[in-house]
Image (cartoon, rainbow, N blue to C red; front, side):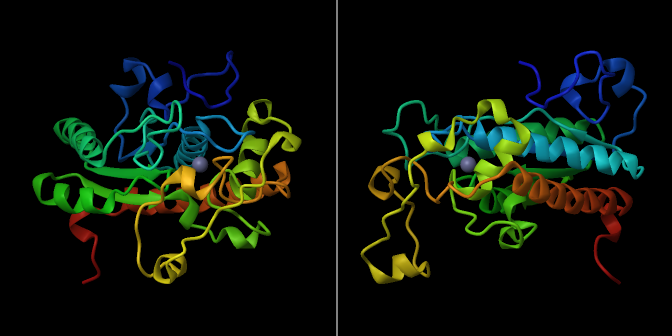
Length: 265
Ligand SMILES: [Zn+2]
């Protein structure tokens, strides 16, 4: 399967995209940091594609790696993991679930491959709210020598600086970003449902200080959570630019910092 990143077919392979790189490039490049985009396959209201999360996270990773590469950091984007945790959507056709314990096993296999090959820094770029990697990294850390950092792209720049009402799932933020990245995959907004979510009846759950995973069908009728009606490609471009600039700065700093000098003295 090719990369989902829009890229001219007659352009040079990009050395920061592993899926495009040949051994010719890889054997001569000393990569400092690998970045692993992790998405999901799930319904996104009536108007966005099932790969929404994977498309966003892959573009974020590749563009951040490109910017970091231009600043001198040797970053390689690994192929995108397309399957996320969908335990609340098992009854929605073709929402494809991979359990957290399976993700832990997959991640450990990737990390051990990198470790054997001398790449000791990994950024796990997550693009799906149901993927919960903190507990997985806490368990993995003492077993491996690869510094693995977690970053959810949607938390590194406050979306309220760009969007009126960002939304949780297929709302204004995700719709805007897809309108910017892959407008041909976005159905007319007149096809979209309102993305209205039913709140919990129990107060603590509704206010968010007690938590239980949401049963998606009980929460929303159109699978969306968040109103997409004010989405625009311009908002998507603004936010995408801000997020990738921020991530690339992190990649550059991480590439430059030796593992044993991670903490201030
Ligand atoms: Zn999404």
